[in-house]
Length: 104
Image (cartoon, rainbow, N blue to C red):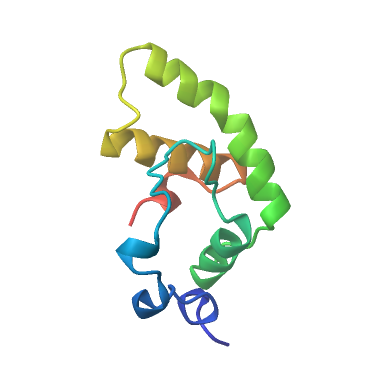
């Protein structure tokens, strides 16, 4: 079976438009315009031996939002690496991954 990285390769940078052809560059974070690819994440997790579905990941991500918001309200920064790690750990917990299993 192919790994998720092989099944979902990154776009070839040579196929991207030249800078002169760009009308907009949007650097967005926070699931406002650009969201997680739950299908890809489920495939990557399967490669690590964690069985889940895209729908389960979507539900876990939605359920994680209040905890993430509380963390940010308490002075956390959404730009901090630890905030991203907290989000991932919270989502993984939401699909039943034990805390110790989510660390490499």
